[in-house]
Length: 401
Image (cartoon, rainbow, N blue to C red; front, side, top):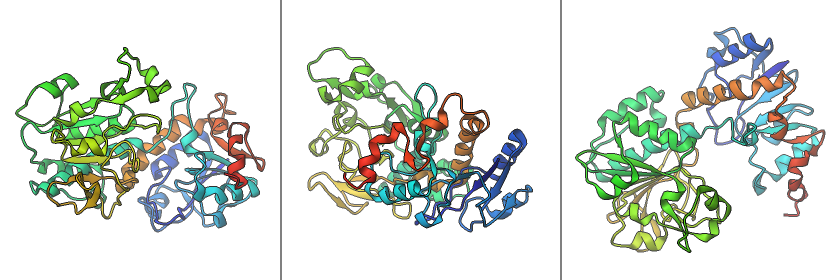
């Protein structure tokens, strides 16, 4: 088998890679296959870094059996009759990629979408989410320093790697009793917690967070049951919230009254209640000065997130009284960080993480007939048709919805 790493063709360009040079060599040694690299001038890992380890570079990828990318592959670059892995952004019927999926079907391509790769428990096995949290928390701390003029940190994307970014955290000058609240308990939240721990910020439980004062910065991380309650007042379990989200109201305001920085790392169902509303943000009790919205649901559960921001311009302000965007430094505004492609700021580190997931949880299934159906369950298309578990996309493919 020959595995090819394709060049990213989508604009704006993405510097991440599915596999680092060392990981390509590891795959060749462990599985007896060949990994071929399509040259690229934009990768975080330069062509010479692959070449230095004896890997083959080739412009022509037609001889490869499996092709690995990161973002959507432009329609004109798709090679017929191949097996592709990339983030297709089609499973939610995204209108902007309908023609891409049509072209994949037309060219008899087996599309394996990274977002659909799960283990037997239904848990995703590859993702960039951890680095979204790592960078998102850093950007929240950086934005707070800029807005308050207490300190200045270097942009994450201007750091060579995470080591340099972490060194910047030594410049933090947070107030005593500075309180940070995190929503979420998955990969993204874990990444955010890594950054806060690197910054020397102490974790406290949610009750102490609400009731005590500290002589140093602290954070707490919340599950959905910390900040949601049943409308009828009955006791709840987590499964109840996920099954019946419309029967719940938010109780996040108790944390908003004492928190200074909010880092949003949750997964949100649009049937669930908003975490804090525009009305909440108007309250004189609302204490949050800065929101780092890593989840970045636009006009959704976090009222201050009016639009995604960019790596080049990551910050803006939200004026609670007018409910409109204002300049980041505006007085009486809530600072907002809502970059929606955060792992791209540390592409070398994020690629190491992602490639490790691929090697541990996906690549073996290319060589062992996929007994757990990991690849099959993530295959949206095969033999020119949608697979049975993605048949719900047929009307979308036909342009009927």
